[in-house]
Length: 303
Image (tube, rainbow, N blue to C red; front, side):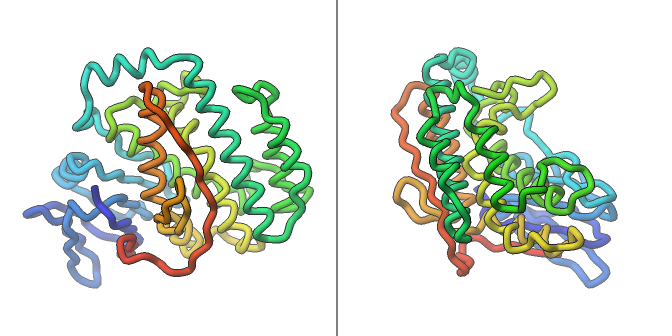
């Protein structure tokens, strides 16, 4: 598994040769080992990428994300077959027990609300209403605390007039961008473990090919919210904001008592969730941890 997040920001040609990704720009030529790349974000429509490179990145389970003319994520690569894709693995997914799916969804919602509380506490914002919502959480979230809590949470974080998904709002655009990076990381690990992203445990839209990813990513959304609170007064959705959201994968967190970067925590968490659904035991304790130091094993290359 790779460890580098590579961002392409300018007119360039991306090709493959001798196990290396070759990046040709007006400033020269860069070479990066394909096996080192965890995520390739092509943050421009002025880049040309060869099919040979796409094929090699797919073999290494590297996620490639493309943007549109507004630099918004518009599509990503997804392998047809994982190295772990076996008929028995698919049979297990189709037969996940209803009880285990409901238990896991309850854990996911609880972890998400707890991290929302943690974010508000970090910025000395009121938490009493959301703490009450967490106490009132029911099995399988039958009362939909996840949605009602979100409305209160965003009002505390970004102001009483803030509404999620408002089309022209800069903060919403940044939130959606950050969430798409998280979803991509979760989907990558799901497919690497041999499962299908469209078979969710709670989300079930026929138009969503990433129902399972949409389920499992929920506890990580507050990490994006936490980072964007410091930038909530931004006037434009600048490239620096986009770089920062990608670099969130290098944020230090605590997962089940172990200190690790967010990208690695996502991988371990998704693996644990899938094993639980397959019939194994599962523990989940995702805690927000602020650390300004960028670890050596999580480097972002901007080309």
